[in-house]
Image 1 (cartoon, rainbow, N blue to C red):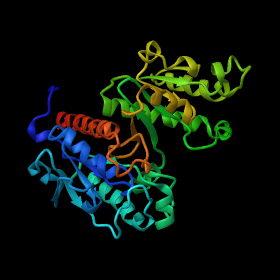
Image 2: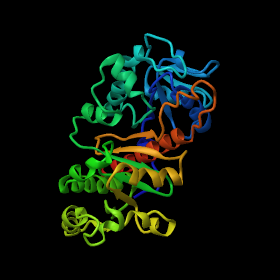
Image 3: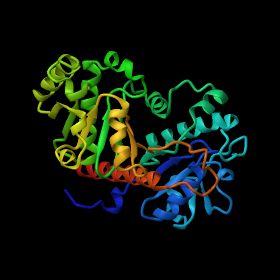
Length: 338
């Protein structure tokens, strides 16, 4: 296989949605463009009136037009909104347009006009208040648009990849929600994504227990014995490379991380505390199991600093870079298959 992609195999640019216009998304888009220049072609979908004053931007009518835009200028696929953005104040009156931009981004990536989708943070309450948004968040809405029943959230940085099996539920509900079927599906989707998008021939997955010391032989809970161990045993029979169930308190130091490519965690904080401790600014949120690439910065709208030029673009830049890297790997695979 060739080590680089020829011009004919270069993927289209990445689509970046605007997210909540009153948050830090618009200013981060400008900062990301200034940092990345032509290193990573991407375009922003949103209302240019929401960009910070004196921002350099250029309207494009097609994603392919990114190539003609100066490297210090943000390419904008214009999507006008009904109301101005007031930094730091949620804008329910713009909710329908925020949702429409996400749908537009999905259409572009599904049509092949964009190679990947990167989404800026949304404010779920503003979307619910202004447009009766019926989804818990971005991920569920994207799955709906894609017609997918189950997706997996991965958080990734250079030092660690984590996948929570259960996500935004109370800790008390985890034992009921943590079923063998859900765990198996999560492992399968993670393994497939690591092969396709990260180039790992046989991914090494470390599976955490749910209880302290991974249950300690059943003395601290039986989820490991009754749920986790049978799934691991069955998938090992299919040649999945799995370790566990492991005690979560010893999984995330440097020597332990070197032994696996991703950690399968049983609940939200078990996964997110270690990665946010290791790389708070550079973490990337990926949605696995969609028919297209989707990444997002691992932070929220940050209303408290919006409009003050204080927002750190590192997570968005990392999300854009990861989307571009995944798109190039898929382009290489597609070229090799032809």
